[in-house]
Image 1 (tube, rainbow, N blue to C red):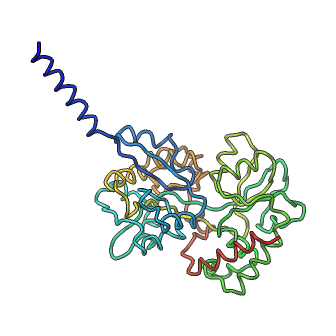
Image 2: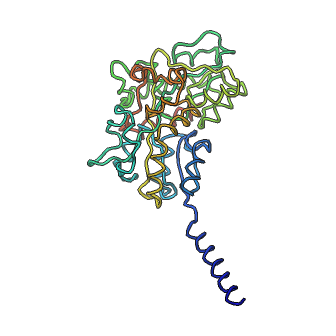
Length: 353
C-alpha cells in the first residue's frame, strides 16, 4: 500500500511539474483598434496555448512615445503605420524577421511588400497587414446632399457639429484644402514653415465647427451615435461599427483625394517572446485571418488571397476588384522629416481659443 501511495504521489508531482512547464506564454500587443478582436485571436491562443493581451494606440506619435519612453519591453507586437514604420526600423526598435518562418509572406501584395518602409541593411523588419484611407464620414439622415470636398467641414451650417482626429492627418487634410498637395502629393509630408502657418490659420478657422477632437475610434462612433456630430474625418472601422448599429453613416473620398496608411506588423527588439510572436505574425497575414480582420474593420487586406473567401460584393466594397485605381486616390502616409514641427503646429491649433 505504501509503495502504491508513493507511486501515486510521484504521479501527482509529475502532473504538477508538467503543468508548470506548460505555463502559457503571454503576447502583449500595442496596436490600432480592431487588430486584437477575440473573433480572430482566440483560435491562435487555443492552438498555441498562449494568452494575448492588447493595448490600443490613438496615434502614431503615441506609439513612438511609448516605445522611446522605456515601455518597449512591455510589448511584443506592434502595428506601426507607414508614417513611422521606417523610423522604427532605422532606430532599432524592431527586430529583423526571419522570412523563412513566415510561409504566408509570399502571398502578400508585391506592391506593398516591395516598399522600402520596413527594410534596412538587407533585412526586413515588418510585414504589411492592412491598408486603407482616412475618409470623410457623414450622417446621411442629417445631411441630404452628399459633400464632395473636405472644405465642407468649414461650412458655418455645421457649427459645433463636426469632429477631426487628434493626429497629423488633420494637418494633411487642411493642407489639401489649401492645395499644397499639387502637383506633388508627397509635399503634404514636407510642408514649409510658411505653409504650416497657413495650415494653422485654416484649422483655427475650423474651431467653431469642432464639437470634439476624437482620439479613439470608439469615441468618434459614440459622437455620431449620440448625434453630437454629423461629419468627420474617420476610418472605415467606424463606418463598419455604425452600420452594424443601424446608423445612417456614409463614407467617401472627397474630390481632393485623401491620405491613408499601410499598417505593418513588427516584433519589438525588446520582446522576450520572439518565436511565438513570429508565429503570430504569420497567422495574422494568412488569407483566412485577413478575411476575419477585414470583416471587423472594413480595411483592405495586404494578402489578396483573402479575396478567395469573399463574395463578389465584399470584394467590390473593399475595392479589391481594382485596388490600383483605389490606391491612386490615397496619398499613403510617409515619413515626416520635421514631425516635431508638425506636432508643434497641431498643438498650437488645439490650444487656440
